[in-house]
Image (cartoon, rainbow, N blue to C red; front, side, top):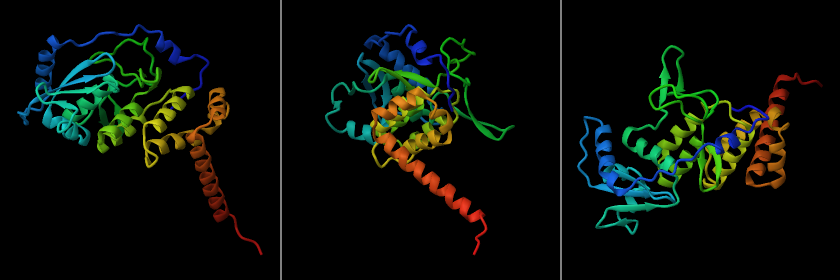
Amino acid sequence: MFKRSDRNRVDKSARLKKSNTVRDPQKLSKLQRSIEETLPVKKTLSSPIVTLTVGREGRLFAAHEEVLCQSPFFERACRDQYLEAQSKRISLPDEEPGIFSAVLEYLYKGDYYPRLLHNKHRNSWELEDAVRSPDPSENNRGGRGAVEATMHVSSVDQFLLRDTVVYCAAERFGLEELKCLALRKQGLQSGIDVGTILRSAQYAYDHTPDSDSRLRAHYLALIIRCRKTFKRSGTMQAEMERGGKLFFDLFVAMCNHLDDVVELSNARTPKTI
């Protein structure tokens, strides 16, 4: 899932030139046509087009109302003050455009790039165009290019695991199946450094309810499984000294893990009188 390295990949990614491209209203009709072209042939959508303004820069998206309403969040939004009746516009200033694009792709296609593919020869699951270790300097391999496991999240100004951010967005939008998909995809990632994992875990704790039993548990299990690496990490030490709910949960999970080990050991040890 990760590797220890003296090279800070996050800093390297941060130095890359950032795109400031913003969609303008003139491009909206082209975007709508693009959406129509990606729809399955068997299904023709006739509901109104809703314009969505996403992120701090106001990037424009367009989607059919009936597609959006698969999400309980957008079903409510299309009925109340979020939707301007005349313009059919929803404003989402706190969402990440890159993540919302993945959510919208999922609503239309049932998956988001990179797609989850089944390898029949190995009888295993893998990610489309995946690279083992995300490196922005690597050349694209055709199509939409090799996907990075991390992305810059402007709200926290950090690079985080993309599927974690998708999971948290799915939580807000009430998309349970998308949460499962994002978690499964994240489990296929590798070559991620300790710092990115811990930052992403903290983000998950900040953007999921205490009742969440999947993404949080995923991070706890990962840290326990790879504890030899984490205990040697200066980043881990610094984060633990800062504290937070993540580390109390980690303590409880470690105790439960030790209890299981002790019980298993006792079961295998012959009792003596």
